[in-house]
Length: 70
Image 1 (cartoon, one colour):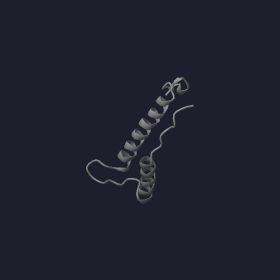
Image 2 (cartoon, rainbow, N blue to C red):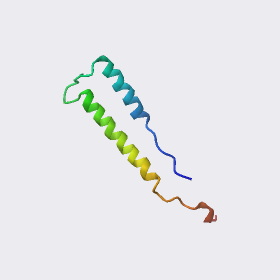
Image 3 (cartoon, rainbow, N blue to C red):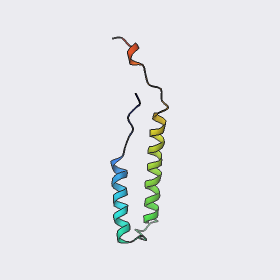
Image 4 (cartoon, rainbow, N blue to C red):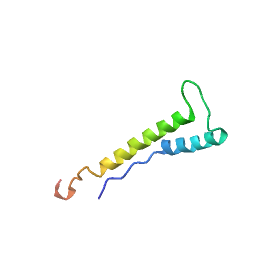
C-alpha cells in the first residue's frame, strides 16, 4: 500500500486566480517586480516541489505492521 499523495488547495486557487487575471490583461504589472509571469513562475516552482515530494513518497519503504505486537 502506497502512502497517500498530497494535493494543494492553495496551488489550485492560485492557478484559478492567475487565469482570471490573464483574462483581464496578460501583461498586468503589480509593481515591485510582480507580474503575471513572475506569479506563474512561483506557482510552477511550488507545483514542481509538490510533485517531487509526491514522487519521493513512492520510494519510501513502508513499515510492515503485521510484525508488531502490542
